[in-house]
Amino acid sequence: MEKLMEQFLEQSAQAEDGFYRMEEQRLQAEDRRREAEHARELHMLQMLGQMFANGASSSSSTHPQRKTLTLVISAVLERYYALGSTSHKGMEDDILSLVKTIIPPLTSKKHKGQDGRIGIIGGCQDYTGAPYFAAISALKVGADLSHVFCTKDAATVIKSYSPELIVHPVLDSPNAVEEIEKWLPRLHGLVVGPGLGRDDFLLKTAKEVIERSKARDIPIVIDADGLWLVTQQPSVIQGYQKGILTPNFMEFTRLYEALHHEPMDSSDHQRGVLQVSAAMGNLTLVLKGEQDLITDGSRVFSCSVEGSGRRCGGQGDLLSGSMGVLAHWAHTASTAGTVRSVNPSVVAAFGACSLTRQCNSQAFQQHGRSTTTSDMIQEIGSAFKKLFES
Ligand SMILES: NC(=O)C1=CN([C@@H]2O[C@H](COP(=O)(O)OP(=O)(O)OC[C@H]3O[C@@H](n4cnc5c(N)ncnc54)[C@H](O)[C@@H]3O)[C@@H](O)[C@H]2O)[C@@H](O)CC1
Ligand SMILES: Nc1ncnc2c1ncn2[C@@H]1O[C@H](COP(=O)(O)OP(=O)(O)OP(=O)(O)O)[C@@H](O)[C@H]1O
Image (cartoon, rainbow, N blue to C red; front, side, top):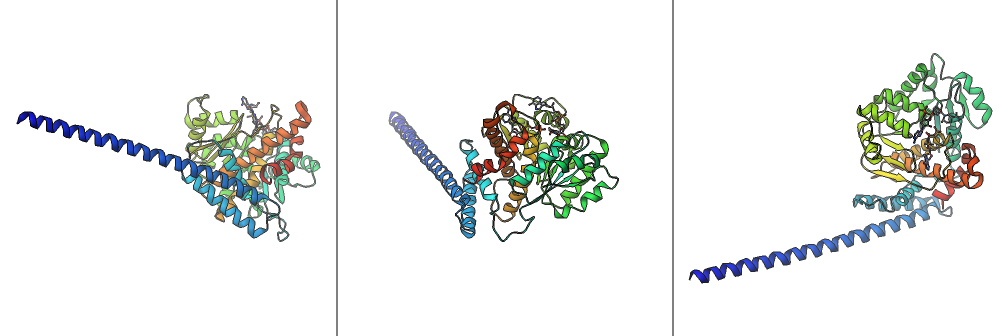
């Protein structure tokens, strides 16, 4: 009897084992099927996004067609990111497709100013090139008006570079903040820092202008000496979702060390940018370099559009000026519901990085080692077309 009982228990245990083995195999097969389906869906969405993006940017599309296509691309890409892609493969193309959706169409119904009035806070006795590069880049990307708020002695010099810019010699005047504030209601985007210098009075003015622009919900790009200010007083922009910081490696290291009170681990830039963005209240951050790393603290996008080995001064100004316009376009698109799950500041940053690198590559093909930022600015029109309108 005991033996029979033992046999019975052994057979039951074997049957149970068999059952669990089969069940495990069934679940594994189900997982594989789901993964394949998921990958197929991601692939299809990527292809659809690409297809529609090309359609939306085609100049033959009419306005309503373009609008519908734009909504379809966004929906497709939104779904793609909602699926939680962890792979970075193809991500650059996807974000580029999103950039295409934020570009306002050129129609005869528009009035001057509608596609963007951008302000640059910067330009002092030492630096007149930087604000000029940023302001002219904003115009060439597609802003309708570009204002420079600089010191008195820099203004005539900047005006002499270009009749296209509106130059206000107010930055070192005693009532500078009030002078600049008068213009804020008309501005759609602000770039703070190119050629600002580090004079205490100018930095104090810049700080106050940032505060007043935040109160008006204006997208703000902070670069160069504006980042010096942020390093001293992070709270000036901390947590402002329409803010973007664009440090080069040196500027980034300073900011990191000011926020974390310890040296940065320079072997892990991805971690570094996530930490800085988080410490800044999930602010959008672009660490410029061999690959530009862009994050809002949730994920890191890298922009590696081919540039060149030429690193002339002023490339960062082209970047910040164009980002000022794209930030305005991206937030407008976001308000209209076109861009949802990807942070509009990230879309704008990615667009500007791609454009700067493409300009660098095109200018380098013609001028090689003698390439300067002015040569790159000449390329903005064709680089823009190649990246976003073809
Ligand atoms: N023509 C002009 O008027 C220009 C004026 N500029 C202005 O000049 C002022 C100072 O800017 P700086 O960029 O010199 O700032 P800093 O005085 O903070 O210098 C940063 C230093 O970091 C170095 N650096 C950059 N990337 C690095 C990396 N990956 N590894 C190691 N070192 C690195 C640079 O060579 C530079 O010497 C700003 O107001 C800026 O806007 C620049 O925009 C360049 C053009
Ligand atoms: N090593 C690199 N390879 C390719 N492109 C780069 C490299 N470093 C920078 N860039 C490109 O040049 C742009 C400007 O970056 P850069 O580091 O020159 O800024 P910056 O030092 O702030 O410029 P500026 O001279 O205007 O102050 C970046 O956005 C990036 O696209």
